[in-house]
Length: 426
Figure 1 (tube, rainbow, N blue to C red):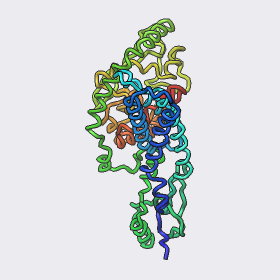
Figure 2 (figure 1 turned 60 degrees about the horizontal axis):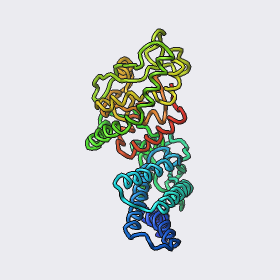
Figure 3 (figure 1 turned 90 degrees about the horizontal axis):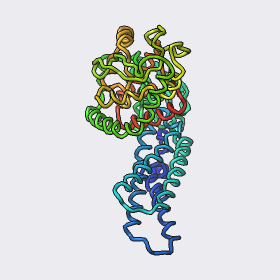
């Protein structure tokens, strides 16, 4: 008798086709070997040395491996499965870095197959993205008990409600239930146990909610849940090192922008070029954040920016805020170790003290260094009201819980989109 409790894509041919190893091997053949083989086949001169072919092949394989690993890691985060915008710039940066490194080290290679490899990588990655979006969108079965019913339909998954403890011959990637619900009927408990024994994962609804929204709920959080949000100390050290290196690389590139912006600010309105404000930073310590001044100094206002139409904002200030140019002086804070490129945005002392009185666990966001950009900024934008800050804090907790280089890479590409579109400007 056929087992009616089967996991989706569990048949032998499905396991092969959707296997990461199989996709990697096909990618290597298409992106690295095919371009080089075409060049060798049509190159009749025979004057190129074997070392040129080897160097070119190794550079192609290195580029593809980096792209394959990063894309596979990034796609698990919320929003990444529905957006292809990070793939193209990611591939361009990888190939550019490898080519620049080979040129700097004076390693000779053949340009034509490496260029074709880059084009093929774009075709392969975008095609794989849409195939996965079409055939690998998570298909979940929902047990409609307790708070699990609050899960909403989302384009990133297929959510089907079960009206009886039976899969009815259908195959799912996982089962979703409120595992903390204290009134689960015995028949449903047996059903969940059978699913687990049939290698069908059973998830608590909050895990799926977190996966969809990119936020960690504060409403149901208890004191002992804070332990699950402990960031990696090893990555904190690595991140501090790379932050400092990146500052030294960027300073010569942005110096002309800094000079021109400073001159425009002086010509636009009276007052200093830079705005300095006391903020709450890493481990709750106070520090002075540096920004380009974007407001008039002779107009009074609230302790926060009115995102609708704040009269204090100057003409130049409106532009530099929209494209985040006003944040460039914070490279000084990054170099001093007070901030990172990516992390929760630091709040002013007054606002932070108010939020701590009103929102539970608010101060826990200081367990990592604040950032110039962050997970909340690229998903929510600017907010100063209490309700918006609660949502922002949920994003910050998600970032702390999933504190990793992969999430930082995704935030980096989302930040590029933010800068180009002006999303969340205030």
